[in-house]
Structures are given as C-alpha cells and as structure tokens.
Image 1: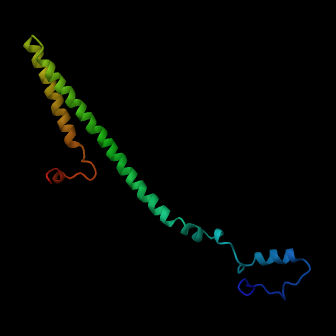
Image 2 (image 1 turned 45 degrees about the vertical axis):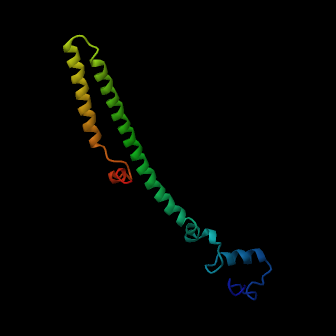
Length: 133
C-alpha cells in the first residue's frame, strides 16, 4: 500500500508526523477521494440524467395532449349548445325568431367544426384502429 500511495518511510521519519502527513496530502500523487472526482460522481447519475431527459420529453408531449384535449372538450360544449338551440327553435311562435336561432346554431356549428379540424390528433391516434375487429 505504501508503494501505491508513494509513501516513503525513510523520507517521512520526522518528529512532527502531522506536518509530514499534510505535506504528503498536498502532493499531486497522493490518493484522493473518488468523491472529489466529478467524473466519478457523475457516473452514478448518467442513467438518471438520461431518464430525466426522456421524462421531460414525455411530460411536454403530455401537456400538449392535455391542452388539445381541453380544446376538443370546448368543441363538444359548442356542439351541445348548437343542439340545444336547434331543440328550442321549434318552440318559438314567430318564424323570424325560429330562423334567427337556427342561423345562430348553424354558424356556431360551422365555427366549431372548422376549429375542430384545425386541432392536431392525439398522440398515438390511428383512424385504422377503429376498423379493426
């Protein structure tokens, strides 16, 4: 062990062992703790950092899918309002009121449909999966 750490007992036979040890620790070839070597410490976190980067990508994709899902929910609410307006249109006595409600419902339907087609499909969505038995 003494040869490995470059400790020479003949050179280090002084009356002050503390000074000898401190002088030896300041030499370049003295042993150092692996915990002071950044490459050694970082080697433990290599896989963790890879998984962290991968999880960040999945989180970002999930946040995009969440906002797209909220937009699809808004479209379904608009479609519900359209159906409600068309349902109450028959209860009006004047034709002008009926036509006004139907026109508002049709405009809302067209706007909701255009908005729905501008939204991206969810991650992993495949239209062919609906036709497989």
